[in-house]
Amino acid sequence: MLKNKKTVMALSLLPQYLLIRLAAAHPEFVEQYYSNGVYQWVSKLFRYVLGWLPFSFGDLVYAFGILYMIRWFYKNRKRLRKDTKRWFVDVLAAAAVIYFAFHILWGFNYYRLPLHASLGLQADYTTEQLVNVTNKLIIRANSMHAKVSENDTLKVVIPYHKRAIMQRAPKGYDNLKQVFPHLEYHPKSIKKSLFSYPLTYMGFSGYLNPLTNEAHVDALIPAYKFPTTSSHEIAHQLGYAAENEANFIAFLAATNHDDIYFNYSGYAFGLRFCLNEIYNRDPCLFEDMVADVNLGILKNYDEVRSFWVAHQNPVEPYFKSFYSNFLKANKQDKGMESYNYVVALLVNYFESKTF
Ligand SMILES: [Zn+2]
Image 1 (cartoon, rainbow, N blue to C red):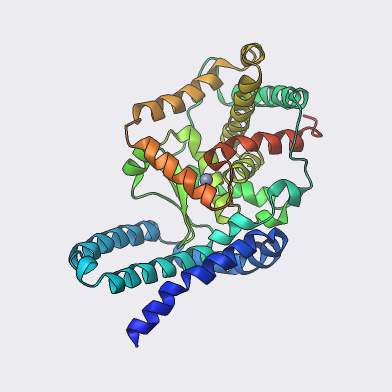
Image 2: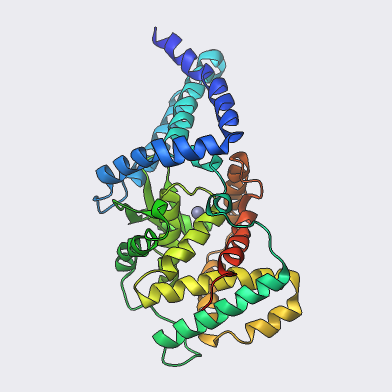
């Protein structure tokens, strides 16, 4: 009986896969019934149950899961030859459960409408528009920098503990929900990762556990990154799976926050994407424009860059390419490059804004 059940579970991978392909072809349906329907309930339930715990429950699940898998493969290593068929049924049945849980609890969000479509923004922009918005962001970032720094050559040091920054991040969403009701964030569930060391060496500053709906920030990254990274992970938690969209929403949440350090971190974050894109298009223009940015802001950028350089190692590219392929498998065609697509959202959103 149990054996039959396992076979059925293993075979369910195929219809599951087809169902997901079908969902991928109908983003309006996913947007309405999953992202703004089922997911809202499921994610809130998990955040109510686990959000109050001061540590990451999901990290313990991961640790236990990995140990269990290693033990299982070790104990069943001989079966692979002697009982090959059932060995594969066992493995595929387990994979089917994880695949199902991943999609129901979070993964379908990869197939929702693109954010520019739900916000009514264009997806394209010209270099002229990009320069215009970048100039606005330079003015804004410089003025925030001037408010929190005594001198335009000093990098900003956020005077709060990292945990306090993380706990304050939801406030930006409180302000944002006046304009975008979809971005209401309650209850919260944001934690430092128990695996911050390995995470740093893998090259990731945070992640959302799709099975427990807990958002995690790498505890080791510079405090200056905490406002935007916390806000980015919250955006994932709200069901914005795409990296570019989570970055754009993080920018909005940090720049709409009541706290000036969040505002600074947010504007500097958005500006960096735009400057990178200017550099891609015209390095000479980049040199001209970057000369207008306060030296202290560039020092904050450098602080982050140095942090990642210091933790570079031979295996990091493998994790990055694994994640990139994971995104591609989930219909994020550009993989990790889609991080830069945030510029299109920034430009189209800010074009009409006057500062
Ligand atoms: Zn992300």
